[in-house]
Image 1 (cartoon, rainbow, N blue to C red):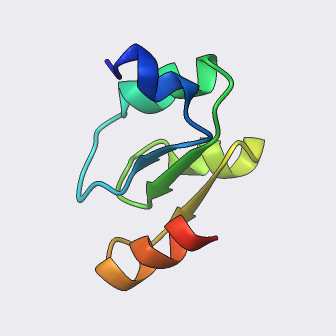
Image 2: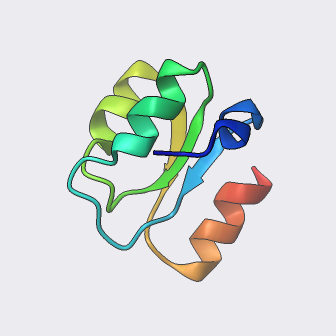
Length: 69
């Protein structure tokens, strides 16, 4: 579970190499925060279809791009 202070951030980033679901992503969305994730977080299609976050492929360069966007 993200720390309470993390839920006050502008967005929650989880550029993971592999996540089955990403409960912290769901918790952040429940707190009204957009999420920045890699395509290795298995709920990325739902995040994309609901337009509540941004995704990039799992690489250093793409993670940097994600954070700057």
